[in-house]
Structures are given as structure tokens and as C-alpha cells.
Image (cartoon, rainbow, N blue to C red; front, side, top):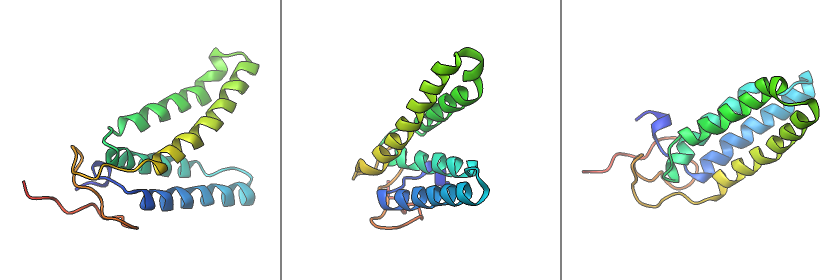
Length: 131
């Protein structure tokens, strides 16, 4: 089973997000710029986490597309003060979404995305159940 089609429990999600945030902080301190790859890692971790909640991974894609449109296209559409306000709201909303993904318990039973992930820290998908 492919990782992006599996489910991810909360403990494993928080380890991935914690390592990505630590990499961003170290990169920002050492090189004076954050590591953009860490955002991609968090996006990839959000997909199986959404699957564990019974939601499609496209929700993460929608948030990512909206953020990229704001970062790269907002300067052409919004006046500077409005763009600064919108980026400030995005900086506040994104951590809230990350916390919600990590705080909400996943579905205990099998769902459309597979069997429930094992408890504790595990990066292997749950074994398939008998049909």
C-alpha cells in the first residue's frame, strides 16, 4: 500500500511535524532562511492523517494551493497592506490547521482509506483486513 493512500496515527504525525518544524528553525537560524522542503513534508504528512480522519487528502492540496496563490500571486492582486494582512492571517491559520490534524482522533474502524493504523509510533501502514 502506498504511503499517501494509507492512514497515519496522531503520534506518528506529531513526530513528522516536529522534525519538519525543527528543520525549519535550524535552517532559519543557520542560513537565515526557512527550509521550504519542510512545508512539503508537512503537506505530505497531512494527507494520510486526513485519511485517518475519513477525509480525502485533497483537503491538504486545497490549503496548499490557496497558500501558494496567496504567496506568489497576492502581490499582483492585493494592495500591499491587504497582502500583509492576508499573509498574517495565513501564518496564524496554518499552525491551527496543523494542530487540529494532530489533535482530532482518527476513526477507530476501517474506512475507505484502509484499516486503522496501529497505536503508538508507527510508520508502516496497517495490515490489510480480510474482506
